[in-house]
Structures are given as C-alpha cells and as structure tokens.
Length: 114
Image (cartoon, rainbow, N blue to C red; front, side):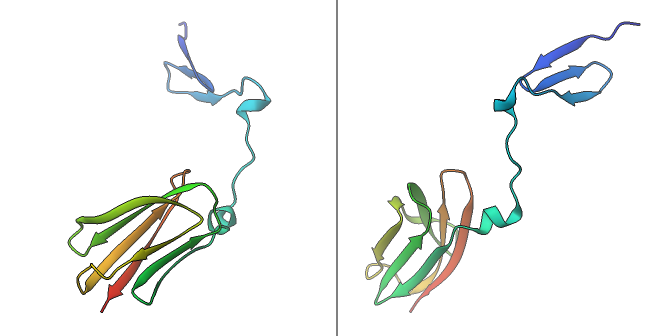
C-alpha cells in the first residue's frame, strides 16, 4: 500500500491522517509567545471632562470602535498612541469601546456617559 502525500506550507499531510510540521528553514520557526506578551501592552480608556481619553503603549495605527448598548456602531476611527474623543454630542447612555491593534489583539471597555 502506497501513501500519497500533499505538501503544504509548513510540512506534509498524508492520506492516512498523519500530519507533521517540517520547517523549510529557520525563517519558519518563531519564538513562542508567553501569555504575559499579550498583556504587556497597556491600553487605558477613561472619561475626562466629557472626553474619552484612549492611551496605549502600542505605537502604530490602532482601530477603535464605539458601540451603543444595542451593538450599533456610533463612531470608529484609527489612532496612534493616544486620542481624545469629544462625547458632548453622544446621548446619556452606556457604550462599549473596542480597541484593536494591528496584530488583531483587542480590548473592550464599558463607558457610561451621564
């Protein structure tokens, strides 16, 4: 009985359900990430004098989205490091603010505008 193999990006897949990861070279091997790496960046979201202040230790474009409690997008945009968003036109309500970096890691905070 012969085994047919299909070459994929990082290895080979045999018809018999066996899967092996065979790096082509050292560029295919990356250092493992620790859980602490995901939390090493600090993102602060707070309300100050009717402005939402978002500050992050990550540099580069980050997306933010503000949702109302129903889940509708009220505002979105991109910032680099920090941004101050005026809330005087927003209704008194509860909002969710999600910030996502270029790696797809995100954090969500609840904000209550009174």
